[in-house]
Amino acid sequence: MTGIHILLVDDEAPFRSALGKRLTKRGMVIEEAGAGEEALEKLRGFAADIVLLDVKMPGMDGIATLHRIKQEWPLVEVIMLTGHASMEMAIQGMELGAFDYLMKPVEIEELLYKLEDASTRKRHREEKIAARAHTE
Image (cartoon, rainbow, N blue to C red):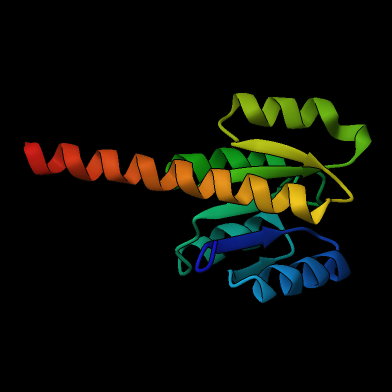
């Protein structure tokens, strides 16, 4: 899992910071954003493999942010983070192309498993596109 580039998007700075440190210790490259608009700006300069995206945020919520991410960066995998009250929004996110969703508070082992799966899926999709381009 070393070297996976992750954009962590959550309006709760202590949560972002703590999770970011835990993932960095495991060899991942982390960039943080506190809001949907900021996440889109960060993606323009940070080649994320995966976006960990909170569903409930002030301003542009996670669903709107997911929609924009998938429009502009369709190969980036998005894992939604949700509390109990927003389960229906997480399901809606899955319908819009999110890789998966996790309940907060996040169990680190489950998160690591999902990150590995999402990274593998992104890599396979990129390889298919490259192989197709090579044969044309």
